[in-house]
Length: 159
Image (tube, rainbow, N blue to C red; front, side, top):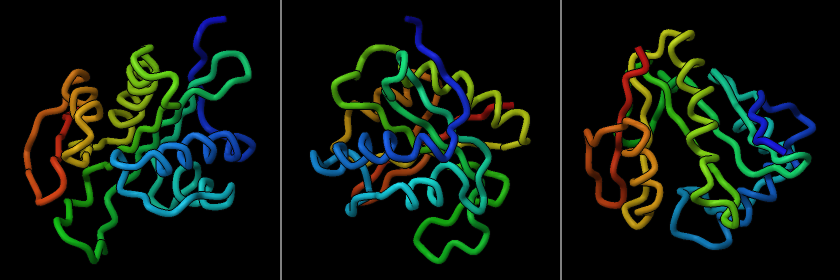
């Protein structure tokens, strides 16, 4: 069965949480430290306050990954705030499904959503030890623009 990429629905939250919680448990590739329940997935990825899009990749009924895009929070209190016309991307692929084109398939939809929303740049901030994530974003057209103590930030112009 071919890979299906579609908009995430609240009913996808359990499978999305399972993927993200496995990634968190493995460690080293996400800034998230605490596990997610379905409600947290909906509020953080499927329907966040500044959400633009959230897509899931499925092989039949098996969830293989998801990718969310949201506007930068104009009231971000943390370090390195970004302009309000930038989007922030997050990608999570089942660790057993890496290197199968899932991230690229998700980004094909996300890039269109970013263009349609008028996003100036898409930010991907990746942990330095996540060399696979860095290579993924570089491979789909992102370029480095900022290096922090623990992260590398890349950006993409969807326009």
